[in-house]
Image 1 (cartoon, protein in one colour):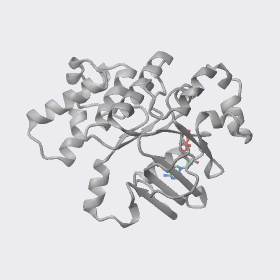
Image 2: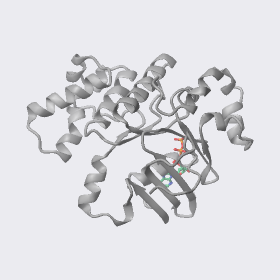
Image 3: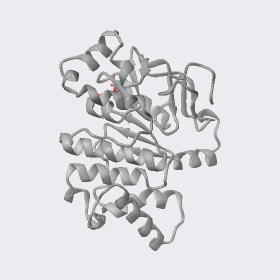
Image 4: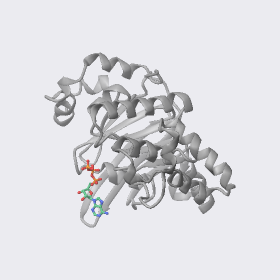
Length: 278
Ligand SMILES: Nc1ncnc2c1ncn2[C@@H]1O[C@H](COP(=O)(O)OP(=O)(O)OP(=O)(O)O)[C@@H](O)[C@H]1O
């Protein structure tokens, strides 16, 4: 739903909105976690979603995925109101989104190729040789060696698990992927390589990426925009360069605190050019 409001889009123009959240409220009993939350995610962007621990980032993600109930508000995915979908529409929406859960969350009893084929088995009716071919393409796409296909998660490094989980999230060629702290637990080089992979996929496949992260390097190097969750809603949103000017105390200490100052300021310019290759 494109509107005439100030979109905060990287180049200041209206963009196709893939995900639109309006006035969302989520509570667990007496505890209100989200209240009056608005957020737009634009087609082809990498949005970094940040906020203090316990602020409700996972709750929002789960609510968008339909795993949590909301008490108020509207969520539209690809323009479709999630409260008014038929079972068939829900299935087709589910097929257009991929999810990389925190810690990879691969099935430990399945090999990499079998993990990647789980969504294919659930949603498609394909002959096995074709599923094998498609899964091998995903393995190549995420930069895993071909022999990773027959390995079990316990036989993979942390970085390989993330890549395998990303391959599974991409199994059905989704239009949007949700990544929950994808670089947590990776060493800085592995994390940077994973960020580069995500940027490459966005650039080559036009993928929209919604990334919950605490990783300042990811925010500075690959995110086109950042949304900050605080006080139960999105407090501020915009390019990282904008975050560096925000005086709100949490945002200021997050982006301009001691740890943030170690980031190379030259990387900030990246955030003015959505779609730039990494
Ligand atoms: N199913 C649930 N039932 C009750 N409370 C819940 C449930 N899920 C989340 N919460 C509460 O909602 C709040 C927000 O949790 P959430 O996991 O979304 O935080 P977060 O921002 O993702 O934190 P972190 O960065 O540490 O992962 C917490 O107080 C949590 O205890």
